[in-house]
Picture 1 (cartoon, helix red, strand yellow):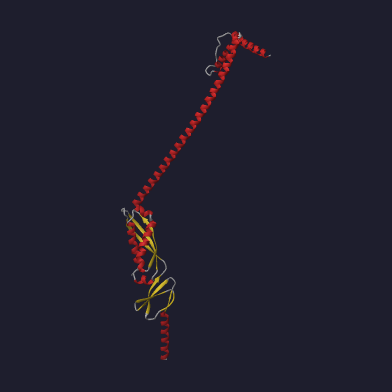
Picture 2: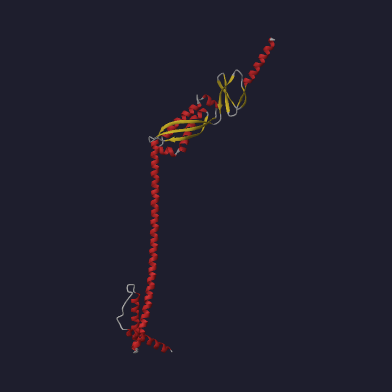
Length: 305
């Protein structure tokens, strides 16, 4: 009976010993193996064997990429502007042994290192540079923090500044400055538009003046030509009358006088300020003149026959 109890205890002890020597490491993790408190090796994901009662598991290290929130802090820029800044840090452990034994609290160390360098980098920049060069700030922070965490077996993959909050009065001042700048641009555009309109208007007036002058020149030319032809016709008529007078034709003189007389009556009749007029002359004189015109015409037609 006592032997059976001994065998059962021994069997149970063997089973427990076997289970304690077999370790299954999940994917994405690495465990450190310690022998009498000293680091021995790193257990990779999968099934691993250790010496029971001699070796033990030291640290269970997450090898996946992790993220840390950087809490808000106040930073004074180079131009003495006070801003509130926060961010995030992405990192991945590459060496489980270094991450476990080279630094006491890895996450707290990375967090403090990032916050310190945020104050250093942003404190060396003006506020305008701070607001417009966020990519440059992220790149500088990544380079400094990644280099500082390399002895800990850590790779910092990204550092992102999430939010930069200037003071409320500074934000209001920046809004007024932006509004003034936009109004300035609008005034410049308006002035440019007025300038272009004035140029186009002056160009149009110039073209109109040129066309008007050209039209006046053409009209003057036509009027002069008409006067020239009228003068030529008048000269021809005068010459014919002179020749008739020289030939002793009294009817030609009557025709000439009657024509002038009728022209004068026509001018009186078409005058806008003279609608009624009195002829202080005898009707027989007009009839005599008309008879002279008829005689001249008869003589002229008679010669043609």
